Length: 165
Image (tube, rainbow, N blue to C red):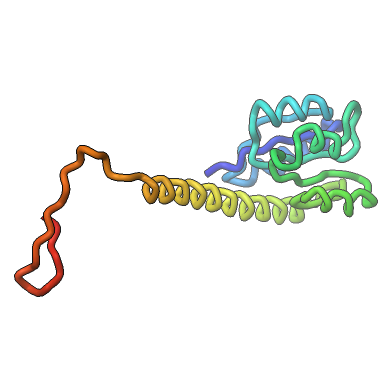
């Protein structure tokens, strides 16, 4: 299972640095790269990434504006990238997965990707549980068709329990 990732930063060298660090991760696939907020909104809607590396300060629309445009409930997990410490509290209030300060430390990025893997696995398990619940509910509420043959119950030769025939 690949972790489909979008990199959003207005600095080309920062995007390239994150991409180079992510190239070492065998299960990370970079599906796109953007340099501004409006492009990020379009890419998130079109590409539906599993993870977004998102710069806080960008022209046109900052990282928080991107989340606002997409909607927190539809936004994939975010790892914020920034040179500014003062946005950390706000980042975690919007349920950011992590907050990395520039210049990005390779080991910190690796730890963030590991958090993203765990979150993605939990989301996948949750989705499967939801599908299983829906199937169980569907079958629990289905009734046999009116023209289905009735089963004949008769006592078993081994005791009093009926046997389905």
